[in-house]
Image 1 (cartoon, rainbow, N blue to C red):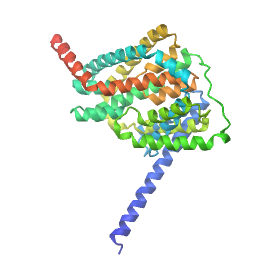
Image 2: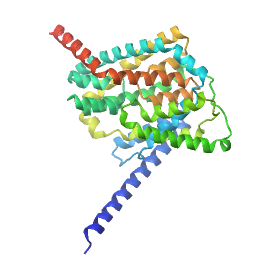
Image 3: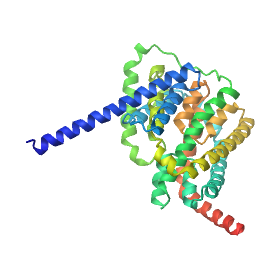
Image 4: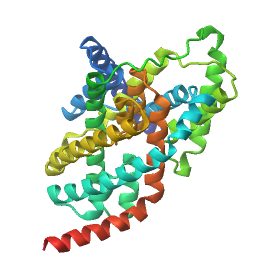
Length: 366
């Protein structure tokens, strides 16, 4: 007769084997999706291919599981690639855009409030849930705050997931159709001469991001490596560049993670919310395009750079799109990170304003 220790050990091995099999299936589907997307000339194939392939598989009921910390490690790689471009001349350019950045963020917060009002009426949900579901910040952060404020966390998660996925899969096509190659090429450095410094930089950045992850900073896994790499670039300790293969692997990891978040049962249960979320996403994207036109006119930035800077989606995905189009990813990063930081730091104040506005609109419609 087996003792409890042997029985428990067997159960753990079985659970481990099941997890490994699920991860292997996810990677196989994601990699296949990446190569299919590349063969079809889809923009950003190593991100959108795995996202769409894993999303479809998850909706079909496939037993998927993302690589543990795969998304976070992918964000570290992207953050390093961004930060290494922050040479002093780039920092000065970003600093000159601060007034436009502040105005654009205020306008986007106002637009997200309008989107919340639309979502509330279309989906028939309460004001707080609608507010957190359309706030231009990360899905995890908004879901946590929504739960704390007695809002419906499932609805918040679904709307954010649909918004991010729809914009991530739409914007690269729009950028490809309406934009032109920005001509900003990565620094080419022989990998053999920089492999050990790059590895040290990666390990230090990963450790630092892990250490400060509890401080509620926006996009810690992207921001902290970007800051560290920017210091390295600013001190002229390079030149370094992230190998293309590393960026490809990072995109596949992030795409698989996004695709795995789809669940047929949740989307089916919230079908009215799902349709309403698509309408609201279209509104947000149209508003971002309008603001991007104004920003481009006022600053001289290319329209596609302005659109990526203002699009209410994931920072990592918008930066990867900018990098693929050889646009200025540092400007996109600055706008996106600042937006999320401002939204997260003012979210409760903005909630009070929204609830007051919502009550007045509700009273006026009676």
